Image (tube, rainbow, N blue to C red; front, side, top):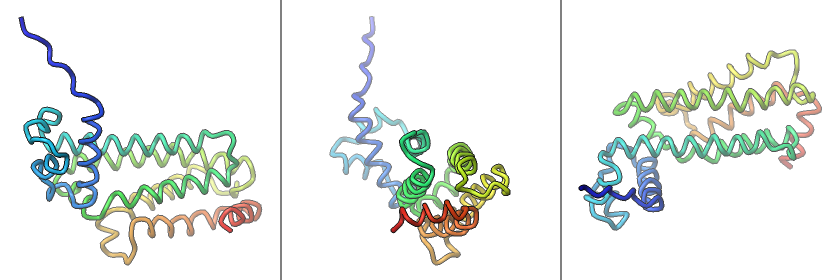
Length: 209
């Protein structure tokens, strides 16, 4: 009779994911080896492979983890009934801008070239999150008079998501003298400064000062 193997401790798995995630995001997926990850963790490569049979498995779960963290963060802000629209807008833009530096151009270019299916999945998840949370925020802003109601909400969501998906990617950033965070800030200035009402603009600037 065989004895069932105990599942790996979640804290060990989380520590592996966090270490691998930081290495992948900083150096790129292809340049980081399982040997290096095991060394950084102070564990044998055999133990590492018991948790993750392949480096690609580690990458896939690391991407799922960061996507979950971002969607949970956005959900907490957008669903927070104690915040007004301007506070939500400021916090959403700040939260996204703070997460962008994690994805270095090296990393994004790497998975785009060497793991195109995971890149496409990352793009799909980004698109869904933008449409869901930004759509809810824009609807609230229009209903409360902070955003111009003559511009269709569906158009604004499409405009913003198209700009993000087409500008914050390795190919475009390589042609711009901007980081991902700077590009995102410029998109916000162009889009939101144009669609805020006088009331919304005054309130938003009061939060920045």
